Image (cartoon, rainbow, N blue to C red):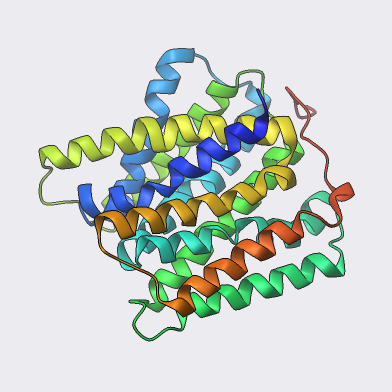
Length: 291
C-alpha cells in the first residue's frame, strides 16, 4: 500500500486529539499524556511480546521521549489552553521545523526557497495567534510550538536511524517510555484528576487505541516507506480535521484572518515539498546501530 495513505490516516486520526481532549477527558494534561502512552503502548506490546534489541535501548528512550513523552505532555497543555483548530495549526509547522533541523541532523542543507517557506508559515501562524478574539494564551502557544518541534526532531531521527525489525514493537516501546516518563511527571506535579467518569474511560480508550497506537504505527510505516520529508505535508490534515470538528461540535468558527493564516501555513507546507527534495531519502528498513 502507498505509504502516503498511511500518513494521511495517521494525521487525520491526530486531528481528533483536540476534540477528544476537550470534550471527553479530565483537564490534567500530564496525566492525559501518561495514560495515552500506556494505553497506546501496552496493547501493542501484548500483541508482539518482545524486547527491543539491547543495542537499541538508548535510542528507544530518546525516540520515545521526543515522539511521545515531550510531544504528549506539551500537546495536551496546548489542547486544553487553545481552541483545537488553533492548536493543531502549530502541529502543521512540524514539517517546516523538519526543514531547518534536517541540516544538523541529516546534513541536508535547506534551499533558500525552503527557508522562505518557513517564513511564510510563521506569518500564517502569527495571523492565527494575534487575532484578539482567538482565545490564545502564551503558555498554550509555547506548548504547541514545543510539541511540534519535539515530534519533528523525533521523526528525523527515525528517518536517520531506521528501526529494529518489528515496527509494532518499535512503536510500543516508544509509547511505554512516554507513559513511564509522564506518569512520574504527573505524580511530581500533582497533575492527577479528582475522579474518573465513564465518559473519561471511553475517551481514554479512543485516545489510546485509535489516536495513538494505530496512528503511530501508520506514521512510522509512512516514514519508513517514503521518508520523513515526503510524508511531512500530511501534517496539514491535522489542523483541517481539528477545525472541522471544532466547527461541528463546539461551534468554533475561525475568523477570516485566522482562516487566512491557516491557508498560508498549508500553502507554505505544500510549496516546501516541491523544492530541494534531493536532500532526503527514505529511511533504511530494519536498521541496526553499530555496537
